[in-house]
Image 1 (cartoon, helix red, strand yellow):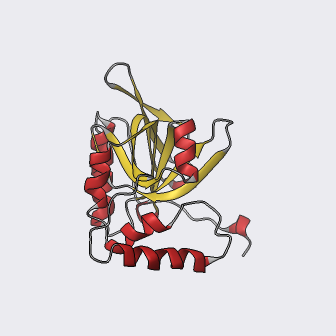
Image 2 (spheres, rainbow, N blue to C red):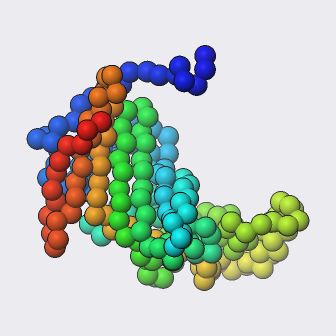
Length: 213
């Protein structure tokens, strides 16, 4: 079968603007809880889309680590591609895709760095190997000597911190996306999908509308 012949119908649910929560965060929380209840692997995995100052786009999968009234948080290396993009152009989009529920959620907003204390508190909960890895890897930089170069750094750092806690690297921390747009997508038959969006009204409140599939 060719790629162009791959298709299936979406029949698991519907979505109506009259039945969604007035606040998009409540709607997200409801859908996220259902994704967890369905035991979807890596339900917190999301595509993070960024853009350089010149407009060159990039996307990668990262893990959501918390969400709430202030926004959606994730962590990483400030020196990485995403770190450089978000420093130069601090806006981004998140995309959750829960295939088993035939659902997507798209979230767009401005991005700021989390305070160092918040990053340290999370870093201290990470497995020790991940803590060492944050020091060993200059994320997105070329390994000119291959993987052995990275593994050598790991061994040196394991020895350096053999008898002490691994501190928070100065180049590593958290990002917080503060949404001004949400879109909830529910797959429907014949590609006539349900798409409900929320747009922020300054200074508070949200406008709910339906988009064409």
